[in-house]
Amino acid sequence: MSFMVELKIGNSMAVVPSHKIGDSYYMDGSTSGKTEISYKYSQLLKILDDDLGLKWLSGKVASDTIERLEIAAQQLGTEPGEDIWKIDRGTVGHILKTLAGWAKANPTAVWEVS
Image 1 (cartoon, rainbow, N blue to C red):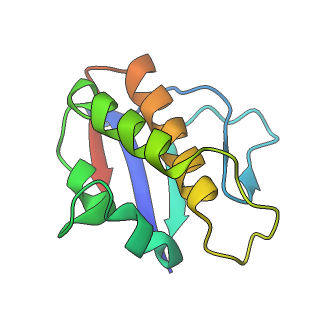
Image 2 (cartoon, rainbow, N blue to C red):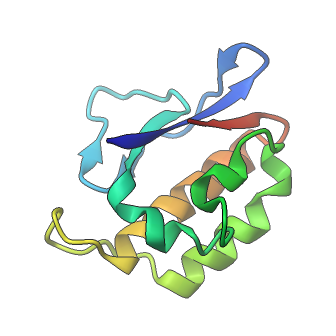
């Protein structure tokens, strides 16, 4: 089970740099602002909001989320762990740093998290 995270401009997916999140790397050159993030990281994602966690992003304009994403990433660290099955602060920090990069590249886009 996972969160579906999308960054949209209108009804279209935002274009983002090719990216690596957790154990998923888009080798085909995908630049779609869409990814899945495992529920196993839910507790650490509460760094964004104690109640909503990652869903705090949903409905927000990307530019309004950059600072919180960057601060959270810095607090967690951004070096992913070697074991993809382990819940790791650095992996979550890396995810949030990547999402902050998406937001910077598309400041007027809107997040959808389900």
